[in-house]
Figure 1 (tube, rainbow, N blue to C red):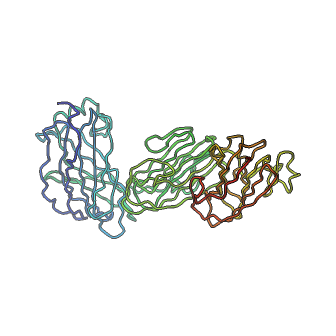
Figure 2: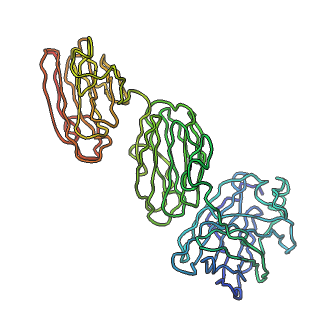
Figure 3: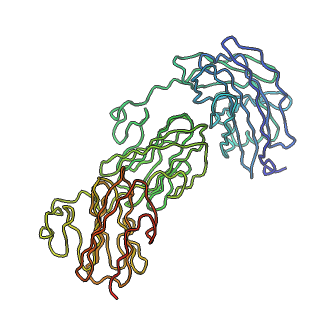
Length: 494
């Protein structure tokens, strides 16, 4: 029989747990371990008993597991259910150890040590998890906790096995004081085992605790540099930070580095942080940022902090509902949070580019809102009345789209993009522009309140026209006649 026949389907087995208390209670009689005829597929039931967990806020622990093989590689699955001993109790993480025994009950000297990836709310709900395909030599450990060889692991699978003497070897809760928890059980057996509650003090309280090139986020030191995206959230669980770079690299837990950036922390059961950063200069362009609720069990608030190379820090807040493992990150994804532009024209221009009149700017330039901008045969200039990020979009007669993401085309150029001031943004043609209709749109890319704008259009015949309007936060859309961001169409020539 080949390993491929051990495909994992829906054959979860439940490891029954009993009510646990400081005094301990008799173990509920479990069903016997189940051994499949397929030598590469195993499941079983065990019972936790004589556990002293109530002082840690946990009244009951139940675990289920399954082992198998898929196309020649091992598969492990674990899930957990628990009941709270008091209101407000939180179970952050728990690690188990089970003894691997042969079909005849003889010990193999091996142990399986595992932590369910996802922990749900109390009350009997299981948090499903699938740890993926580990290497064979990571499936079992010896009595010292050392990984065994691939050959020994495969031999245990072929011979058939079950688990017994399931132990809690590590637990973390929100209890206010340390507890002395112990838990051990088997199919009809029980004994004691010591366990320490994980009481991890914050790694840092300020950036000064972290050293050079690192910063403190949610009590943890993470990488810092020219560009940083840091995610935290309000409830223990697994939220994932996804960043797509201008070059198309997708940085997340499954692809942790690319285009000079790195995801240096992936939190699967706490409240963050997750962190993507560039130590040196990041690529110029637009970065898309998404927050994916990979494994959460209730509506969870998140905060995304973005620090850009100009030293500015922005914060974005939102809420994610039930788990969604779709890791696609585009502007239309339900998990999309924001797009951040790095590099290109900056709103704080050099003193020599500031002006009071056109005369301050020299040939082929004009003064707008205190800044010198390009001038010529055709010009579109946008300003607005509240600090924020408004975007000028111009569609040329041949459908070339000029905006911050495509600054040159059809002989025209966007020479100024203002992301936090009141403008101007400016598109101009020094020489004769293409003949035809130009569509102009004003997009409120990032503003906090309704904002009034003014669009000035100067055409080759020397005429100057002005258009005004108001944009509310949150507007997006293509630059088409009839779209919410459309302002006007201007005909040139003919």
